[in-house]
Amino acid sequence: MRPSEQLSIIKRGVEEIIGEDDLLKKLTISCKSKKPLRIKAGFDPSAPDLHLGHMVLLKKLKDFQDLGHEVYFLIGDFTARIGDPSGQKETRPKLSKKEAQVNAKTYKRQIFKVLNPKKTRVVFNSKWLQKMNFEGVLELSSRYTIARILERDDFMLRYKEGKPISLTEFLYPLIQGYDSVALNADVELGGRDQKFNLLVGRDLQRDYGQSPQVIIMLPILEGTDGEQKMSKSLNNYIAIEDSSKDIFGKVMSIPDGLIEKYARLLSNLEIAELRNMPFRDAKIILAQEITRLICGDNSALKAKENFIKVFSKKEAPQDLEEFIVSKDMLNEKKEIWIVDLIVKSGCAPSNNEARRLIKQGAVYIDNNRIDDDGLQLGSRDILFRVGRHRFKKIVFKG
Image 1 (cartoon, one colour):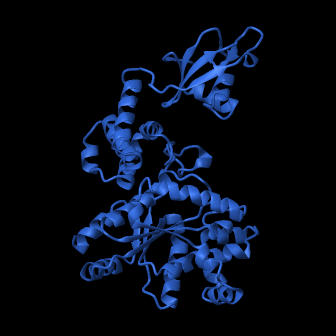
Image 2 (cartoon, rainbow, N blue to C red):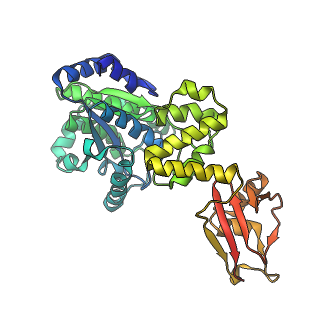
């Protein structure tokens, strides 16, 4: 494939490329020499679960793999123990070495749902950072100034507000940037919140006599609420390790206004074709494609069939989960409060959230919407639905 054609594929969904002319030159040299480019993306294992927000980077790495380039999935098991200060209003809690290692193991399992394992090199930055002695740290830190580090908005805000900034946080951009030197990366991918760190890597490569990496920044993906960045802590995320049924159902729950963005960042679907469809039809195609990329063709097809069966034909899913209401959960009248049932069955984390779901019309019993948050239930088994994709068969054993 010609370099210009490769560049067109690479640019899909990209927010900014720093060094685009350099990228075209690198692609041209790669084509002539038959030597693949070295593509890097770093992930600090600060939590065990990856979600579709991370998949934005994984999908772009997969694009590079499909174009014949060499992908380095860098696990920041060393930097995770410092904590990336990007966008943080205060110092992150430190992660132990053991916690970082446990989380890193889950990453290796999850990324190969998207990436080709035969074309992926998984590397850990502890391999070179643990070997660096204090002389090496001083030499590295001499290459940047405090004034440059304070150009970061997040650091400057904390400095002006008198909030503490640890020396390790000041060093973090340099340490992450040194990863690019260690790998001699041609291209590094990252979210726009990583721009400063990525630029440091580019500067350090130049200082160490390497060709500066091209920086490709990708947009931040909103979660299923359509408002905030996808995050497990906000409970608006779609995990890569979710079941195919849940991935499909959760994609179907995103606001219509996010269809194009999800399609552009997480698939190769033709945007123009989706625009000419009703929102629901476009979303079904999108949900099937995202589910296929993660779970495979058969699982995606079954998830689609299950969704249509449940939501178009109003039938319960085949693999319906049971929740047993035991005697000790019932009151004197052998009944259970609807809010209590929602929480105890795992459909909401708190009574307030359960009440909110009822108020929004998201709770159904036997396909009948429930509006009364004071309702008491008992005596017979029921089909229980909370939201778009949480079904339970409630069995009373009291």
